[in-house]
Image (cartoon, rainbow, N blue to C red; front, top):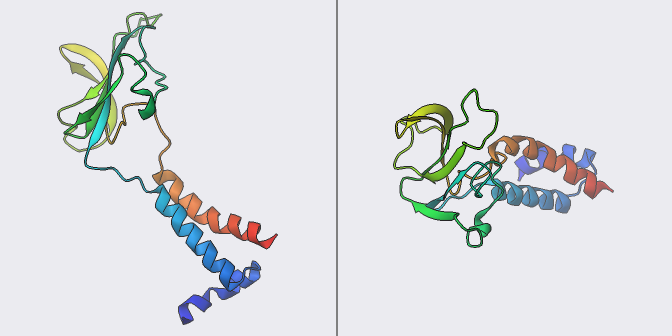
Length: 168
């Protein structure tokens, strides 16, 4: 109990009572738990292929898991390896238009040897392509904001914002 009251001057300074500080702590814990991404054992990848302006597989990819059933040519397939990929072929250095640019999203049998997500130029099916690997459920869709990068700033800001709200 003595440990709890050591931080009491800080809460007293902010004008927060014992019940409010307990509520603040509970809110902070619930919020931080909600940031944790829980991936199940089953991971899925988007599977589609588009060429040029035709199709819905091209970037920017605007679909999410709920759109899969309604969009023709787009599926979310189970992926045993857990590694998804995106391949962009065509559109070389001298390309003015993207009429010959083909985008394909798929499950790959295995990821890079170092198990790191990455994008790079490579050779795929005897063609020079730009290929991306990622590990996670439906990760080969649109880029999403990394939750890990938000955790520390939110851990710092949440108590301060809550204290300001409780104070008024």
